[in-house]
Each structure stands twice: as C-alpha cells, then as structure tokens.
Image (cartoon, rainbow, N blue to C red; front, side, top):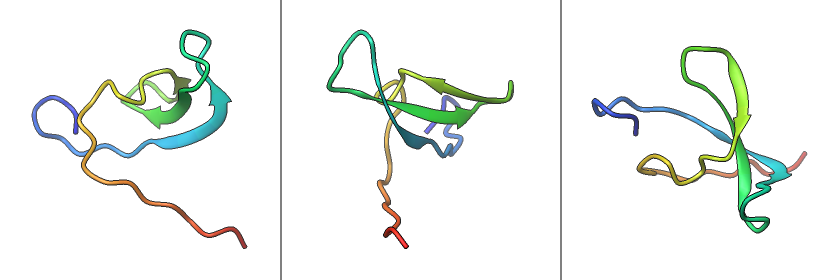
Length: 54
C-alpha cells in the first residue's frame, strides 16, 4: 500500500540488491514509468501471489 492507502502492484525481479544481496529487486510503476528498484519492503505488503510456470 502506498501512502494515502492507495493500492500498488510490484513484480519481483530475478535481480538482487547491491546493498543486501539476498534481497530481490522489484519492478513497478509509481507515476514515472516502470523501474526496477530496491524497495521490496519500502511499503506495507497486503498480498503475495505467484504464477505457475507454463
């Protein structure tokens, strides 16, 4: 959840953080285009979903 109680979706990348190598990066768009960033735990998480490989 973003500030103001706005919902937001992020996709976990296969790339790792340079600061904490065990932490994965996320791909998301918060108004300035899609970016891959190290903010997996920057916002409150309300769900976790996984797609089965085809």
